[in-house]
Image: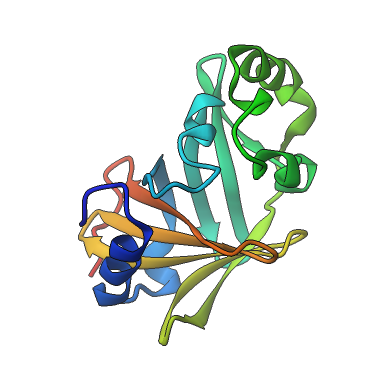
Length: 175
């Protein structure tokens, strides 16, 4: 993988990686950002983002956060995405992170909030997480047997958000 910092290099790397299937996505994944100058760089981690959970093709939890020693799923439709995508400011302060932590119980859900599908993105068909209520698709490519590079494609933005997922809990390696 390229060093964080350059979107063009990250996308060139993404384009060179092999696709993954929906079946290979199943399980729990630890998430981390991949710095490219995107407004979301480092923000999810600041708020306690843990990763994603794929229970089945129709049962995806796209935003799993650590809260009070346990993992909870957040309903992405309740997250003010537009506010988070604005240039850095108030959402990056410790006060905003504390406010999010206090609001977290109101944002959680036990219901899935996305689905997995095979879609074409940048000329390759690969597993894609499609949010149920937001114009967002996360497309995945295989880095190695336990690591994925993801690209979040959000309608209305001119650049994707790049992130990494690492398989948790000894799940099966990618084939």
